[in-house]
Length: 311
Image 1 (tube, one colour):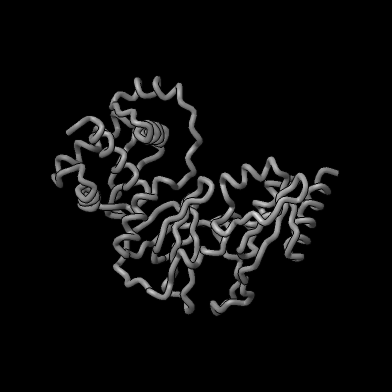
Image 2 (tube, rainbow, N blue to C red):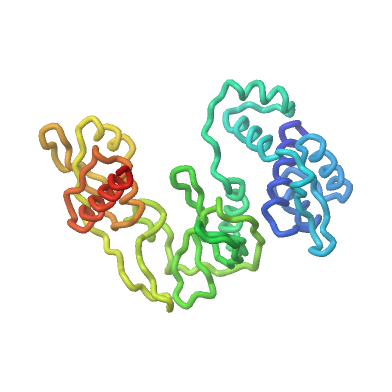
């Protein structure tokens, strides 16, 4: 086994055990076999545990009450930093098993810190591909406790460095897509196979949306209270800033309408969502809303509130 393949094996074990609900030895070894990095032998697993403790300071122990393995974080060192280092090095072609040498090489590289939860992406992609339900332990911002949710995952989506799993909750009366931030998921547990609803399409759901939420408001029975219709959003921006927006469009519907002196008028065909407002506010005062009136008034109110907070 090549050294880098061995390191990949270590990383997969840590990520699988730390993000799944007390997996068994059989589940761990089968996961590695599916990834093509290990043979399913009992002694191989005990060797892995020993090497993980030695090389990554990750202590994996068995919980007799739960009947599975977990990462003892109190007894472990900062193994997540080492994993992040190896993954970043791999992405730019640096492959070595020597952690000390790798740290020295990576000291000359500056990267953006990964969002929490990104390590769940490979497993969730597999679950989407295989159409397997997943039970997640998820906590919304503003809430104190994690809640268990059973979802049918349809797609993984990245937005501004944050990752989301897009799926439906099968127990809901009306099927609709929900987005769950991976940085707010503590554990995942693979469930039963499910049949995808062909009438639901994630890409169509986000076709006219800037961001991750479509802005629709639902009643308790799951029916739409306020349908957020697609509309033409007219905006103006100074010519220099337009170069940046044109190079990295806000949405696939973005279109330059005309030049107005030192400014450029452009438009989007999207829904009015909180993410759209946040994007406009990020570009204030360079970008100005021309239409619709409701969006313009909402942006003005938020800018006034922001100014008031400085008084």
